[in-house]
Length: 398
Image 1 (tube, one colour):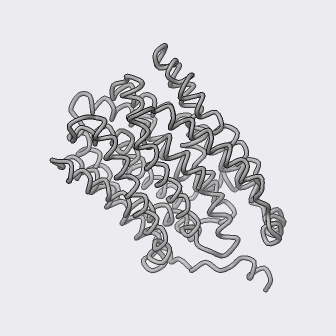
Image 2 (image 1 turned 45 degrees about the horizontal axis):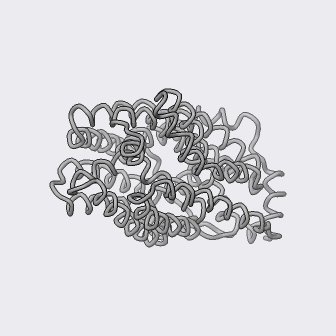
């Protein structure tokens, strides 16, 4: 919950901060996002392999917590100075730091949550919902603070990181988890298994979906907050409404997240991914057609009915089609890493389009691309039937 509080506080308003506080146009903002994607792309394969090696050990998570503590000084002192001095240097340093703790780190956090859920016999969505609650609380608080003093948002992030360190130090591994670690050591992925993934057609088809749909959607959403404020009389009013709307949206996500495992077990992971793809495409196209504050707000809320399904479905798709011992590697390379590859190029291109042809035309093009790849995925994704998850400890006991 605390990690997602920090994540939401720093990422939800990042594009607004870069344009309003950093003085960047959409093209330069796109360069920053591209740099973040490059860094995340470099970190994610490493995080994935290390996560599968460590299992339930907390070493990698402690690394993220240590880096998060510096979020306040970074945004208040270092990053603004870099943006005013040299945009390329700012992109390199900012991309490396933010790419590690957010775009790269969030995947490792998600994979750890899924692993703990799987080993304890309960659905990932039930645990992840607390992340939504943390994010909702964050956007409610930071949405109001952003207009008064944006620096407070990042100092709160540092405070929450210190609190997270204290809480995490008291989180002890139970007997069942200790036994699970021993079992994981005995059943570690064989050498060469990661390389063998790239010979698997299903793996490539999953990456095609992620690149053509998930990546395009993430790039679309990067500067959506900037576009959203254009529908209001002042940027400050738009920012305030955006913060309140995102808070409501994330609470909706929490409800959908609870229901997501049940729905996906009924319709299958492939159909769930296709559903998410159609919703993402519809939201992008809808953004290009929105003609007022109410319309763009309704389009924004569509996010709540897509993200939880996508997050749960991707893990279930991996479990149904691949070796579960490689789940973190597959998630971080096949899902997170693939999105960053596309975002490296597309973020800058999209940013330039916003400055030249405008947001509406750019969103229509992005939505059309995502729709085409969603239709292609009907024939390329595997429809292997999912099985309802059983308690691993019970299986071992038998």
